[in-house]
Image 1 (cartoon, rainbow, N blue to C red):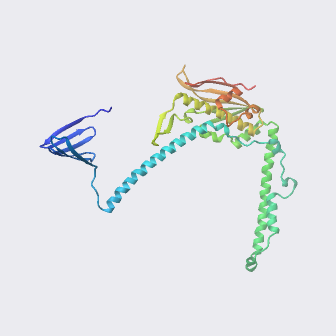
Image 2: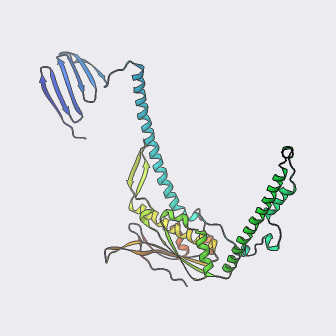
Image 3: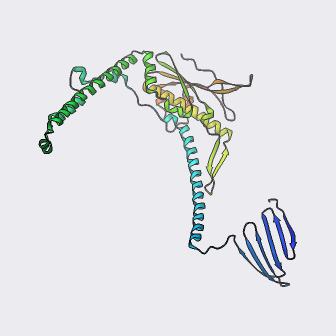
Length: 366
């Protein structure tokens, strides 16, 4: 029950000033008839027959009643303005909740995306017509247009057929240049493919830098470093930057459609964060296996962790997992729980539901 107060002051015969936590009002009248008005604009008239207990009360709202069409239209527009503002508030609330739910969904589905698979053996055996001093695709198309050219009636009359034919000859030369450019690019790609097949580590780094397969993960705040000592094994370190990824608050809609924002329970927060880290790790391994011929990919996830001996945050490894391509490709990525899926691989992870990740040792490449 709320706390309230009310006080009445007599300021003249038959006139009283009423003060309460709901506002200020004034009443006047004589026995059997009384009129009152308050600061909210409500007006009340009470007529009674003394000694009978019979009374009649009428109440009216604030404001004068306008008669002109312009004033009546203005009142209608003001009511519409309030309704529009209300609908905009509800729409903003729906948008906020949809954005929140989408972010949570994205966090849980990072591992479902993957780069196209590169077949370097097939790329290395690619050929181009220029390689055999033959016409390329673009030149063939341009010559076909030149050989089938027939001047129109208007071109004959205006004597512009020579110009039109010359333009087509220029297009043939441009097409030959385009074919040559494509051939030179393919030649470089074939050379790169052969270097990769020969396990040239420098070529591996060139591919990673050129393709930037993990760039879309940067929107989640992750940074990456790549290490190759053995051509068959890739190590990837990534900064999970937890403060920028998982929301600290839960956004929902009330029954009336308004926005409700509450602090996310710690267990839920840590659970989402664990799925995020594991989902990123799987995605990193999938992309690396897709673009380069590694046998194993070792992922080390790093985050800031409080060192209780110094009272300062230090960078620590919170997950270290060694993926092999065969086992990874056997997973149903649409149905797995990313955190649970770590059990399929050699990994170091210590996770507490109420405290989150704890520091672990890195897996050493064998």
